[in-house]
Every structure is written in structure tokens, then in C-alpha cells.
Length: 170
Image 1: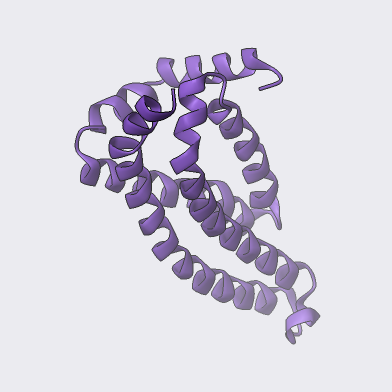
Image 2: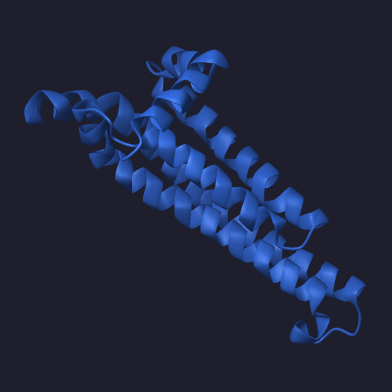
């Protein structure tokens, strides 16, 4: 909201790379839209948080912080319609961010176990890495229900709630 040009730049990037066209093409079929959202969320969680943390301890946390900032620029309510759209979409943000927070917590546990194996009762870094990887795996599984619920809510709320809300409130 403070720097609207940043929002315009991020929106232009999504127009140029085809993301906006993909969203528009899926918008009328909420089940397919939610499946696409689920795929994007799971893939981005794996690629942005888990994969970097497997290579460099805690790297996924920093990468996701940057991604959250750039995503926030796109979602900043620069118009009245976008502000109204954030009313139902705020629940989506809350649900999905909980899933991402679990993944970041798993990346933290992996990094801590890898760097300081004594914190989980192992003798060497290799055992710490393996034990941390197991814990990250269990936490990753617990994010799936959150991602599923978040994707369904996001698709259906954007399809069926935003337009009536804008008509009613604006």
C-alpha cells in the first residue's frame, strides 16, 4: 500500500510469465482451480523451503521469507476491489501460512539436528541429519490437510464470494 509501484511491477511480472492467464482460465472450474492451487502450494513449499534446507541448513526459511515479501506485494490491496477480495482471502492466507510455518519449523528442526546433533541425542552430524529429515518428513505430511483445505477454500471463495461481496460493499 505504501509503494503501489511495487505492486504494479509484481502484477506485470505475473502477466508476462503467464500466471495471470492460467488463473483466469481455471477460474470457472473451482475444483480444477483448487487442484492447481494445491499443486502450486505443495510444489512451492517443497522447492522453496524443503529442498534448499536439505542442502544448506536453514536456507529454506530465508528463501521463503523473501518469497512471502514478493507475494505480499502482489496481494497488497491497492484498489477497493482487492481490499474486499482480501476479506474471504484472509482465511486462505491464514490456513496456507500455517502449513508453510510447519514446513519452516521442519526446516529449522532439520538444520538444528544437522548442525548440533547433540540436541536430539545423536553422536554425529550424519545421524543428526537423518533424524532431522525424519522429523521434517512427519511435519511435511501434517501440512497436506492444511494445503488441501486452503486450496478448496481459496478456489471457491474467489469464485463465489468475491463478486457478491464487492457488489454488496462497494
